[in-house]
Length: 344
Image (cartoon, rainbow, N blue to C red; front, side):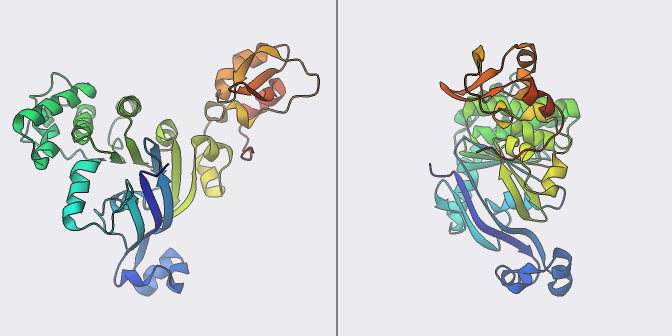
């Protein structure tokens, strides 16, 4: 399958003569020393990844890790220093200004942490703004904006102004504005960081629901591990502009690439994330199992009650194929934090 987004050897360097840094001996210098010697700051260093159509791809890292710079480079809101980016198979860095405007207006939409709503416009016209830029008639853009507001649960609020809405409702308006243009890709730059925890959880659930309904490709930037694990099909971890690990939530929690990632996931309950494939064992010759098997995708937490009640091991299956067994001897240690290697 052709990736929706493909990023290859992407660099973003801020400072004088930034283009001399990638591929030179200077690039090997520690970040602080490079800044002292050249006046340049490497924000994104030789990053490569693909995002598949319909995937939720999360980029996470601490403040200053380069994640917001990275997402802005995808549509050249920040101009990359070197490397390649393609969206839908089309090279972004080769686009002329007209083609780039079309990419931003029609194919890719962005949702920011600060909602960026127009205070003098009612909710309906805020959502319709991108469609207005596209040149749609007032009737058509209002129709599509109203449909999108209903999709995000804001039906009946069309004629209110942004300052009459709560923070969570304002962010829903921002989300509706992005969805109204029917883009192929949605980019989220820490959109819920300013929201209260309860509203934030509601908005995360809203994104999961909308993704299930509309199936867009999502790139989601966050510094919050729980948010990343909740939303991401795959997660990329950045440190000082470098890509440390890309993997599923299970792979990050079960097999962190290094101590940096391990420290990130240290407090995550393994039984809430890992599935039975991480802890199952091979069956012994002649071993009898419970009649009803468990799927290997079952989260450990969801198997606890049944496994602890069983008199015999329970078969673990992948479809109709027997792949292993699980019993209390495998389950109980997994309820305590243990890092395991990625299974074959």
